[in-house]
Length: 298
Image (tube, rainbow, N blue to C red; front, side, top):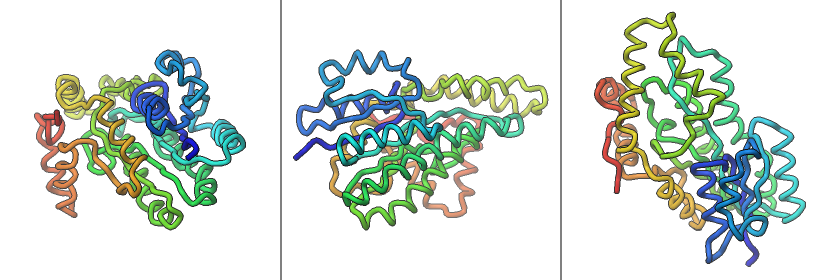
């Protein structure tokens, strides 16, 4: 069987890079991977780690999910060269907390353009290829924050809630064509996703915004500090998430939705048990609780 062809976004670091390297370097059933990123100046790490797989089973290409021409160029190149595309991993994303009344609407637009519309536009471009070949895998890297709300994550969470709705509705049509659409919901992962300078600095600057009332500023500051203190305890190593993504890609019939640890699965079960959502809100009002579970699975 010929090598499967994969397109992965957001490969300059973190989940995207590690997934691309894992799939391209497997000894059994290696996958031809197009690892894409917004800035080619960020490719040094993946080039170094790719070793002999570079330009053999792993190809690095520029793709900015907010730029139409780069999406069309990469997908057209893959189609013309291989005549197929088997796997799409919509991974590119940016994250960060916000104080709603201090957040410029343009920041909302930037995050939605990357986290939601980028995945939608790429899927639009890829879907006709997969429908014609009547097979494919589309893996959308969402977040547990796309399933349950958290304080000060109105911006990031809403972009991921939108991605969840898109994924679930799309899956209902795609399974008719043997295309399996899946959402992966990590909690905090030890990556650089929250340090995108285009947006994170603007969000954190809100702590000093004098137009925000003092109580909100204090609660926001406390949440940021609590997150810093607990991140090492609750964040997953990226390899655990990549293991799950690899399993989904190899599964004959993957599920619609996966949380990346038992802690997040338990959180999702608790949130889903109350259709009103009120119990979840009450649990998150505790100022000493960053997440419902602070102990990551080992």
